[in-house]
Length: 143
Length: 143
Length: 143
Length: 143
Image (cartoon, rainbow over all chains, first blue to last red; front, side):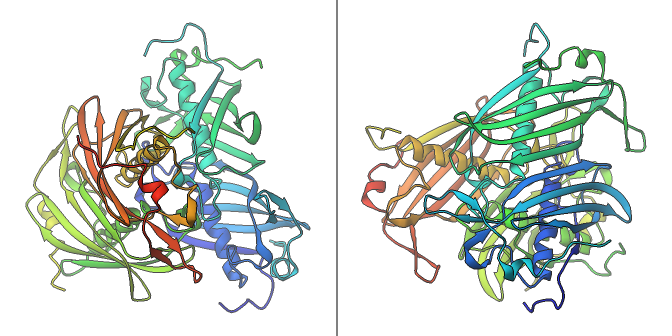
């Protein structure tokens, strides 16, 4: 994938609700919103010319925090937009917010903070600075 | 199931991490912590003598907010404790916190707010007071 | 969605592997192939002008059998094609096969049999003939 | 975990249906039966004194085939038994069947074939003989 010319600060994914994402109440299970947010985040990485999982220097990006507020339920086959926007970048972490909408109507808003880690010889993970080749591909959203 | 004699304010679930809950990084996917929290919440309801899904008066309890902070990763076959504690009860909602531990070590802390809703004739959901037969089975945790 | 002019007998869905679909071995968990197959099946229904969940006459289509044979692993961000083809239609059931490929390479082949049921007053489900308005939208694949 | 004294040929897991395992039709999604089967398989490995993921010689055990036939639906909070029984062991693979029951009533029957693989330097996987320390812990079920 060719790198984008300028740093990326937001990304919108469009997709449809799958049947198996709905729960016994007939609406999308609240845990799946976190998966939707991650799908859009990975789109953000791809749009930047990178893959979150194909990383240089052996680093990874686990979440240290994630949250959602739910405004309206989603149902099978709903067509939704999932927008992620980077709101802060520090030496070792990035935070983004997420807005899920359906035809312009707000469904849910969330956020996640990811931290750059390197796996240690004992298999534990340690926070490390985000490599320059990665951090330069992203920018804080101005919108 | 016989009703407990006094209101319930906390519940601890013990379980093992399943293989399919781990992601491509070899650790439990962050979205699954929300499912663990819900499993413990449903244990709390059962301990109170109720089922969250077998409710009187046609009410349901969707989440309006949910969050987690992640301290340490979990791996396949880890044995964990998931404790939920009710921290507030209002006319129409309840909030609880969740502590996930592994042998006493803190893995993650979370929270969720559930709201009592009744389905309207047009299939939309409207917040309503928690029925007396339900709210009297719960109490705010003092610990 | 406007109904297609002629009956539908096959459908191909293209999508990318999501991170949370990979398991602790770094490959797509075998259970998720069944979800991929269902996603393509629902595309087949939509292509026919119907929704499997928005059905007339109160019928539903649970699976009575499902299987997969796995030839090669899938990894995060792989771009795949999921093709379903109807291989038989009877009074009360339909069977389709599924071929998952990646750039023409065979990844897995599966099948599922769905049966038309109506929910009885006691909440049990009973097999019933597929309504005419549904069955006439599908045809057995000749390829 | 201490190794069992004699080879293991079957294992029964008891568990309750979780809310998020039910789908928009209010019943357990058919893909989750494959996860139930795997949970019981991993119990079988633990009962043998091994872990499927903590393996010697760098081998893994992906599935090459899996199937289920569904007899009755499962609902939230159902208490079920998931029994796996080894039906054949060859040089490089094992096949087991799975019976899911609820209070003695047959819910579904399934099967899976797992094959022993070693990851090659190019990341591809190649079938290899099951190491002696593993194969000697299992036996074909006589029941």
